[in-house]
Length: 127
Image (cartoon, rainbow, N blue to C red; front, side, top):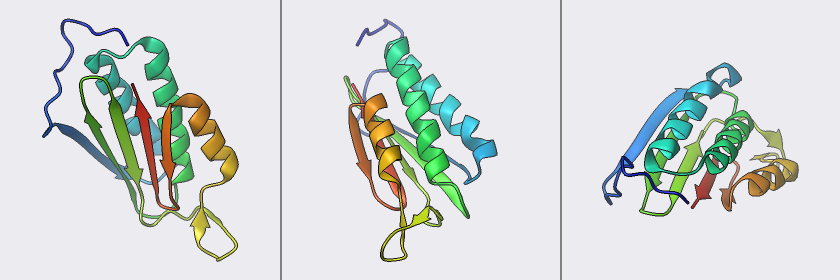
C-alpha cells in the first residue's frame, strides 16, 4: 500500500457510518463513501477500485426491505467495511432463511483479501 503525506492517521475511535435505503439505486452512496475514504487513507487505486466493486456487490446482495448500514473502521494498514441489513430478502436457503449465494461470496473474495458473510451482514477488508 502506498501511503500519502495527506493520509488520515488511524485512531482507534475513528469510524465512518452511512445508512441508506436497501435499494440498488442507492448503491452509489456506499460506493462513493467507501472509495473516498480508502483514497483519503492512502490505499492505491487498484485496491480502491476492487473495494468499490466489492461494496457494490455486497449492497446488491443485501437489497430488499429496510436499509443498509455501512460502517468503516481502519488501522494504519487496513480498512474494514461492514454492511448490514437485518431485513435483507436475499435468496431463501434450505432452511427458508435468506442466504448470500456462494457465487457472490466467491466474487467478493476475488476482489478483496478478507471477506466474512452471513445472511444479513457482509464484512470486507483490504490492506
